[in-house]
Length: 205
Image (cartoon, rainbow, N blue to C red; front, side):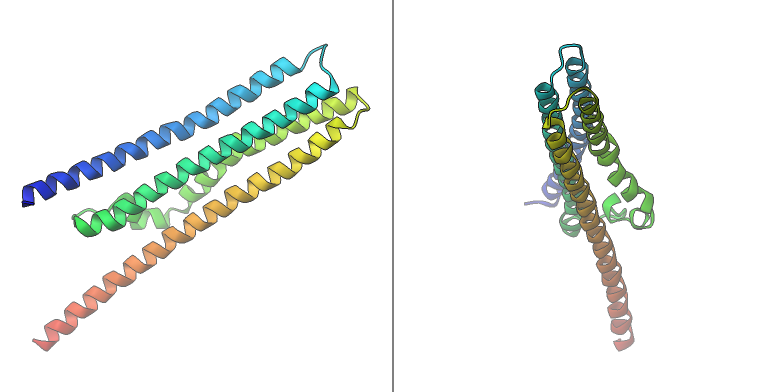
């Protein structure tokens, strides 16, 4: 393979990876919007004069299932986006050295801690907390209208599900931040090692 062909292949690979990242980001945002829209529709349909305890409990369960599915898709897109960025800054950069470092491998990303905080807050504010508030509100509404036990079981499952979703988000972001820090440290150490070897080789001459 000629040098021009390798350069063209590297450019196509990079562009394809970046396009996949943009597509994933768009789909991730759409997941949150669709969840909020579906939850609002369910609440609008359920709350009414013909509402029963069974329907209320079922609505709470459906909202929790929707939130679990939306959160899984949201975090999956986040993981793939991060993996693509990691690939570009490691494997792609190693095979195609460039003068400008990739964003995911830049020092600015490691120093800017607010990026990680906002990435952690997004699924919490858009999926986990809204689902918990909606389910709790419906449960309290059922408590004021009915003496049945259905709303109690629904509320208990909602609390447990919200706690599990919260743990999943925090644990995922903790692993991702640790990976970014580890990569940055190893990259920095590798750079210092290369400079040390160059100085030693120069002294040997």
